[in-house]
Length: 133
Image: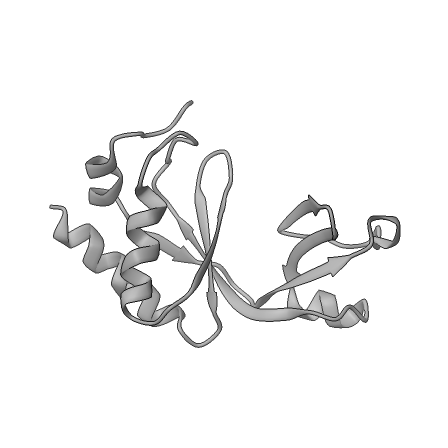
């Protein structure tokens, strides 16, 4: 299952699902990563481990966090080798003053949007899809 690579097909089939809850970004020393976490994503960097998780969980663990955000999962199965898909989306969101932190999984791309801007971002995604029909 390699996913779709054709940019027009991806944009035509674009839709998003707003995931329940508020997510946050946390950075921790890899030796101090709490085992009890249920993160949405873990990414190792030179400076530390970045963890994306629900804000409630970060607060319960006493972890300092940044960027309270909402997660939008793009439902189209995009290929990891698709060219320009996230660039189109990020550009359109930027035109409306909305920053995005995209994360690609094997099957889907996920957009982390500032809390409070998620409805506007969802409307923009719908407009992008309509523009490509």
